Length: 338
Image (tube, rainbow, N blue to C red; front, side, top):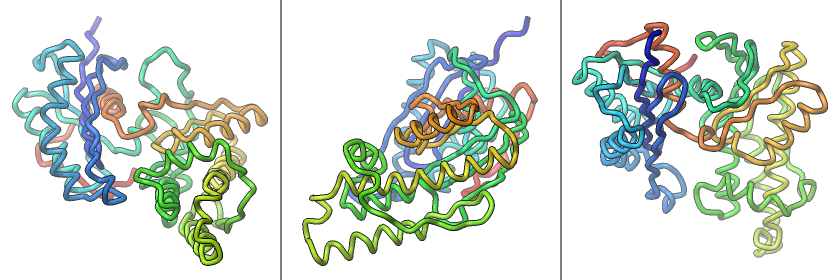
């Protein structure tokens, strides 16, 4: 019987430097170095992100190898995020991966970040996994997509945002509410005791399965600006209700589109992925819909929602068994489609 391959995964697409070790489909370690420097600027500063990656990449990889209790000589391949993401950040992870693969004389594997979010569902942790074909609602700060997944290497985007992503709508709304970065999780937190129907915002009207959030963001901005003119304490006095209403408006769009995708395709295997999939209200509402419509819902563990190298490693595993390798000339790409 063949030994299960050991894959080193490296993720550096935005502001988290992460390295993971995977044996077969089981994660042995998954280490992440967060960058707190961006909080004071209210968002990720690309130049600062790439500098922090350069500082963190070697210690994070070293820690991942040590926690996995293996030696670097046991690693069979290295997988890295090719894109999409911030180019300066991607180049750090990609350059390290190339150097490591060249030095150890092992295969190099390029991974699509968005596909990796989806394939995180196939990390073996004893949980039920989606059955092919399935639909995946992939929601993050930079992307919002509905993907029809027919196999680990055959995916089709059947719905996407025509402007902003849902995660950006959360973060920009939080900034309008004067919440610190990252604001998305804070909106989720304050929403728990708020009234989802307290405030009404504009509803996006986009055909088919595509999304739009720029108009909703504008509606939120002007609603708050208008009320602040009459009451300077409007945000403080209504924070919980504002958060609940904003969150409901964003999640409603996502729920509506995935329900339409289920009706259109007839597929009743549904998964969610990406950073926004950690949102408690989205999880709850999707589960309600699943129970009502009798479909199977797959929700990832919280540590696999945000950017992490475990998802890169599992993607690398599937490419490894298919011998889908790249050479040293492979380049990182900020905008990368399926």
